[in-house]
Image (cartoon, rainbow, N blue to C red; front, side, top):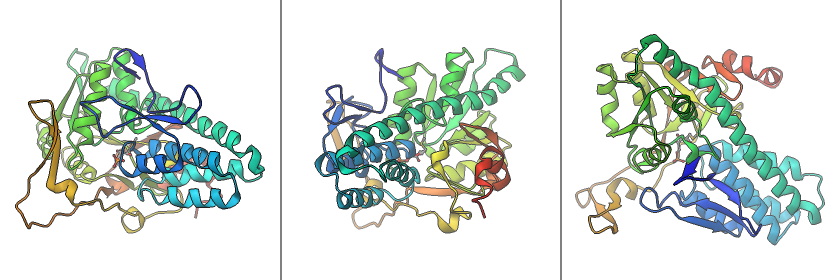
Amino acid sequence: VRVAGVAYRAIWVAEDARGVEIIDQTRLPHEFEIVRLYALEDALRAIRTMQVRGAPLIGITAAYGLCLALCDDASDAALDAACRTLLAARPTAVNLRWALEEMRAALADVPPAEREARAYARASELANEDVAQCRAIGEHGVGWIEAVHARRGRREPVNVLTHCNAGWLATVDWGTALAPVYLAHDRGVPVHVWVDETRPRNQGASLTAWELGQHGVPHTVVADNAGGHLMARGAVDLCIVGSDRTTARGDVCNKIGTYLKALAARDCDVPFYVALPKSTIDWTLDDGRAAIPIEERDAREVGFVTGRDTDGKTREVAILPEGSAAANPAFDVTPARLVTALVTERGVCEASREGLLELYDERRTQSR
Ligand code: MRU
């Protein structure tokens, strides 16, 4: 995806091969700043402080974090320790575990002296696969947008509602939920996106709106609570969101507030689609509500809002009365029955065990 005409990914190996570079997402939309990660601690900090975020990007950052750790110490003990600390960086997106398992498998029989090179090669493969998978998600999902357009047969835009940021900033490139939107737009299908602001960290307002704007996709940011009203008024043709963990039976865990959008969509007969690569499927879990660990973030994120004032200075302001408690669960689970369909790099399927197994037949023998 391009930023001011220049092609970027959300993470890449530095040109001089000394470290890995990321776009600091805590600075967007007001500042575009590239940060270099030199050591494991830098990668850990980037994930924990959400300089990088979004399930697939967290996984790829962890993979590169392991490379950085191995530059310092390629011993078995260092490899184990780095995997342990990276795994604990954020709890909900299963892509983190997936990426570390992929890296471990690639490094298992490699002697320490060769580990660093092998690790970089595998991490870069995973990054390239993520790009290809997101592009494929776009190809499989764009039909939903094209079908609405064909039905209408006019220039009026197809209205898509999305929650949080599941665009290219949440992956390596293309995004998951936004990949079909970008493809539709690139193919000349008129598309407009309702962007949920996504309190408390505002990933919709600050990241989704920014990346759609950079790509020239028409969009409107709405307060999180506006979605139900818009759907009831017929202003939303379809919802597409991403996922941080999808269980074997198709329950979907995504940014807090996704569940309420799915409920409103069901009540208003609006299709509710979820886009995800295979790295987001947790085949070990069934009941998402019972089993997915939900990240509890600092309540400070609810009590303070950060933004740019009229002098161009970034400021944090308090919005709660002194002494009021706040809670900050960061994700919720939407049960499979509220999901119209899933789209992955392999195609579209029902949100159910059978639906997923139709796409991932190789899992039949491993799945309970
Ligand atoms: O807390 P975040 O910003 O990491 O949460 C991100 C989301 O919830 C995204 O919707 C999800 O990771 C899907 S990303 C393609």
